[in-house]
Length: 463
Image (tube, rainbow, N blue to C red; front, side, top):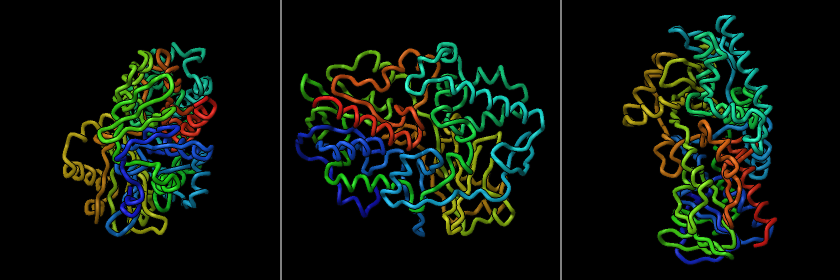
């Protein structure tokens, strides 16, 4: 949390008794708490970080420009984000998308317009066919229970890469599809179950919506950064939000739950755990979680992503008729965006390093990563890209409170064997977080929806 709000939220230093304890002050946990308070329930939100927002993190550049090092975009059909933005008076502006995009393929750099790069006709047809077929199959996956799809077993026994191997014949088509899909999942197609990919596509609408800027998931940025909405929720909750309060254990009895950390203890009638499954599995539960749920948490790793931004006095690439959007078959940076503020200054090139490239580059120092990023940018945008006035980055895999991003991913066999445990309460413990969302899973929209769903669950049950 940014400094001017820090004094309004204190860490727990006493024993509390509330109706509901919420673990995690990301958008899921804060939404659940807000809805419960609105229904007349007392809550305590426990957050290990010294800030709220979870995988949304806004920082400021030396000149005061806000930049989002975590989640930052919103777009059509993300109605929960739109409603929250309206209530918080959070303004948005369109992501810059004017001019030509760049694609690096087969050792050459070309210009193009639209979502899909201009390559050979056969490759374009192959890409179009594969995307259409994935969209068609995705519509057959029930969002609330993907494991019940008629072909769930067949789809969950293979990876997305295996499916692509049988459907995409052209090398160029496959390379571009891999880039696009890696951008969506922050993981390689070989890491992901085909069933999970289909569910995720259906959850967001279709592939074009997930990939696109205009009329897509990347259409709008928040003028003051996205974390401001989380801060508004936290301020509304006041001292119910407790920072620097890592939950280490949850003990259940027939009538209550005891949520504890190093220097605090909260007793509640129910608890909502609103953190990624992989982190939820690191809490010590008494009695132990059912094997079905515990095995699930062992099988939902986070994606791998490093978000980097090179800052320049002006967005000089616009002078060359470029949008700042790049798709490259070679790494480590395979996608860039123009992330400049609405006023147009400073100029900011946003770079994503994802999947295997993020795992490899994450082992290097920040100085070494900076050199690699600037070398890639200068190759595509010219020598002026080599000398930014500032550089910022966030390796989400190294963040102890996230251990990766954008979200947890399901490998082969996980949905069909353990999917039913994802949202099913365990006694008085309920689950939230974007990984549990059926609509816009993996996005802030999904996080908000999951928090509202968990709050409804609690309200419908006797305390």
